[in-house]
Length: 330
Image (cartoon, rainbow, N blue to C red; front, side, top):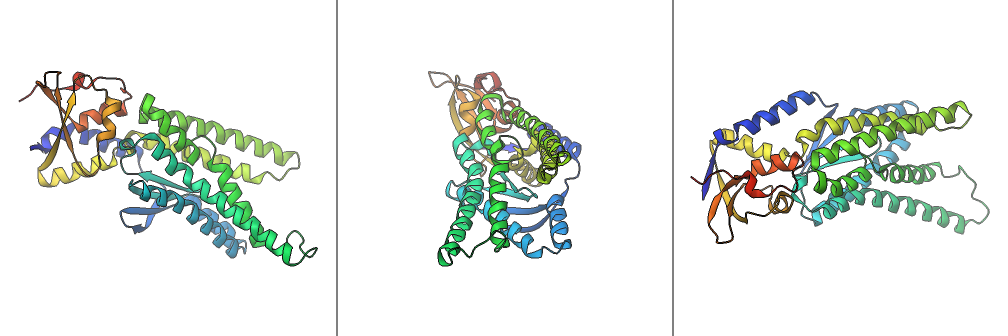
């Protein structure tokens, strides 16, 4: 068994710390921890709460918050069954953003399934609300009139809104995470995050402009005016954190390494022609790997640390052969 020492990873630690310092203060704070998942509330959710409660719509806020909770439970339940740990959940006004523990360590389709499970929960809740409509009208034919059940109508509208907004194919929305999962294997996590974030900024600008035009022409498109800036805000945060958000579990290991000075390493033997995109899926957050590179005659050519492999992956060097990263054997 190899042992990796703190000095070996000092350069990468410096890279992570510089990234965190550059990104600065995030406008959210932790409110709870469920298992290994931190629950954070973003300032946009607080603003939505202040507006609704201050306007006398406390019950509407309860429906709104409950819909967000059920939406996010879809992500967490799917992640649980796929044995993928969610390290952090950040609650925004348009939904909740879940951060997977080591997102590069799972196949794209499972990650996409986790992203899409939230909108599916919102769709299910909207359908249940609509079925409740049908139940009321069936019991009292001809009695129901619009506005008679305002909370039920609000429940359906909120969940249809969460469904529609989160299906937009851009970050920080679930649709953007769905497509980033596919794109990251081709161009790298960081570049994929930047592209989907740029699309989020563009979509947010379009929605804001569309809402402003609608209001000036007499249409009540206030939701577009609100969602547009929020989407731009979230996309910018995603872009700024993309440099280090996909290596948080590695950062946690580096912190333990700094405290203990040494860490046990599991060896993984790989063929010299294996490509980076084929190897990253063999990594797991609970272990640290040292890749032993061999030729066809099983002769040791050198070794590659997990850190170096992930650095190349984050830079988008997906097609690079592992032999191009090896260090000479000791």
